[in-house]
Length: 458
Image 1 (tube, one colour):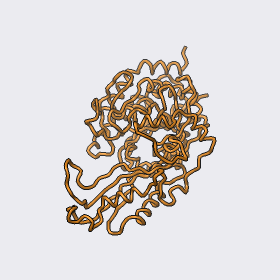
Image 2: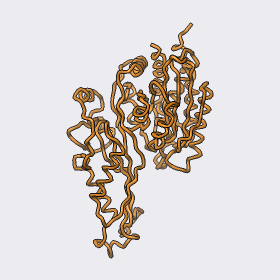
Image 3: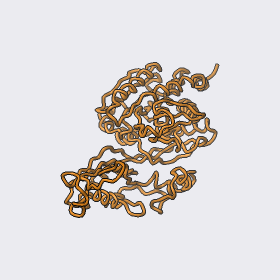
């Protein structure tokens, strides 16, 4: 008689085609959280997941109203009151697909080409959600599931999870768990499994600057009144020096210094400066020379303009002095920075720097708390052993430059450590046209999650 682990692994192998079809069904739902016109599709995505959890035998399934998009909750207590509880995190919302004309395949259709599956959300993170559910379904089918389960699958991660902070605090008992599985991370190469223990936080801003009552003729008024576009560019440009250091007073006051042992670990990673140069397709790297490109991208804070809008931008000339200008910019944050403290510093800097002849308004659109996770917990070691079993090599531990807001909220408010893993690769073109997922890595991730579940019993 085969053991439950072997039975679950065989079940996953036998049902790979179905799991792949389920992923295609979820990708086909354009659950874009940033655009209100897709709100019905957000609802459809949540309801699809409700039905999926029901088919797996999950209980107490709820669509929770957190003040934003619905959150899918469910639980399974079959392991008994003495067993640990794992909270499985995911998000079913996706980034907008624009610009559509740059897609080689339909954005909301899962199209397989060789080992790659194209479509919005295949990698970030519908593929990861289906992968974790596939592994849990296989383990439930095989029996002897060693942990109880809770599910938290949200619909607004791509807008910064603005409702989750207060919602988690309000429902602390509902989400209480011993640890969390967060598959919204990635790996460096298809042959190198990875566990991410550090995630950056974020403060995302929108700055509006206004001057004259209406657009003016630049020949008649140029040089007589302050140009909002010029002033916006001046202020934003002054927030960073030529070496990439943020000039806002107090910005670095709470940045946790890197230990030499950790920096030595970083130097052993394959993400060297040449790696970043190749992935970026840029002429040269840039930034604070005190740190490597990897350290700048994962363990140091940043300030970057994400979008600019002002004046006449259509084809041909129009000599206009714009009445308004707007910029979106974001600060990636590291432990122990606080997004709201950074907001206060940015606001004061603008107030002290901008010319009083223009009006301005700063909005904090989203925030995320940075996090550092425990590297030596029993659950993390169970995952490391599982990855080594499937890939045949030990995983590497790394920090990641992106943000997963819920990880910081779970850690800070509920004391829940997250295991951050995933099969996403650096060239998956996340948030860009032609997003894709490497199918062999996805299948290995499913098998590693199954091994992880049974390793927890040890």
